[in-house]
Length: 251
Ligand SMILES: NC(=O)C1=CN([C@@H]2O[C@H](COP(=O)(O)OP(=O)(O)OC[C@H]3O[C@@H](n4cnc5c(N)ncnc54)[C@H](OP(=O)(O)O)[C@@H]3O)[C@@H](O)[C@H]2O)C=CC1
Ligand SMILES: O=C(O)C1=N[C@H](C(=O)O)C[C@H](O)C1
Image 1 (cartoon, rainbow, N blue to C red):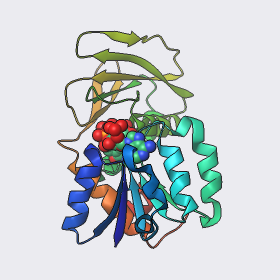
Image 2 (cartoon, rainbow, N blue to C red):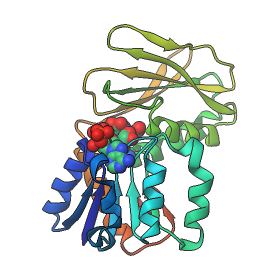
Image 3 (tube, protein in one colour):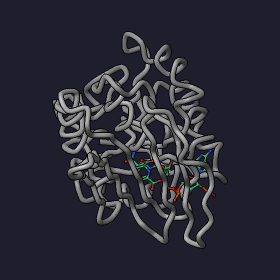
Image 4 (spheres, rainbow, N blue to C red):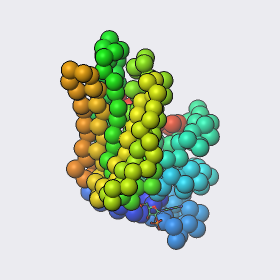
């Protein structure tokens, strides 16, 4: 299939490698300095555009692709709080197509199923309090991570004693600590750590006086995200509307 890349950074390069290995063609690469290529015949020839940019650019990129009726697969995080409703409206009834996931790795799809099940079990065991921690490289622009937000929303949806999640502290390599761990009992605290070149670690811990139960997903590289994004593009070619990994992996 024909793939356009929007954002040619760490993920864009890795997705190109995986897409070529799987026999696809890259027909267009759009980065900051060639935005006019959105209006090129090469971009319009794409079956799917794969977008990995940043929290502030992502929504505009979806709109520019939709103008040419090009379907989008996107992993950019941090835009949902401002544009979720608009994207839901644009993709309603398959008018436009966006496959979005805060994390494309197969491992996180499995982790997320375990996360939801564990939260349901914990309704019967009020002696356990739950907290989350995510660790990423120091270049990351958003905190908490998109994956942490998705996992936190799943816990809040499934465990009666938590009403919402709250960003706690962000701890940096040089020892700086931003934010505060203060929170109410009905708030799920999510702490962030920014360290070196870590691709992404997500940890959910249930703690009681007697013991702790921790589940962790630790990405060894970005390769799992890139493979998932290309699998999502292959799925998106034949589907419409607002899609996500639950559609792809059938969890
Ligand atoms: N869902 C998932 O599985 C994953 C999601 N991510 C998310 O994907 C995003 C990108 O990650 P990553 O590749 O590591 O980041 P990078 O910073 O390495 O790459 C982003 C690229 O997008 C470019 N860019 C910025 N603005 C625009 C624009 N308006 N149009 C086109 N290109 C633009 C940047 O250019 P310049 O450098 O010049 O600004 C850069 O080349 C982040 O939001 C990250 O959180 C990352 C990994 C997995
Ligand atoms: O910025 C990253 O690198 C990552 N971003 C995604 C997120 O915010 O959850 C996914 C992955 O953890 C890597």
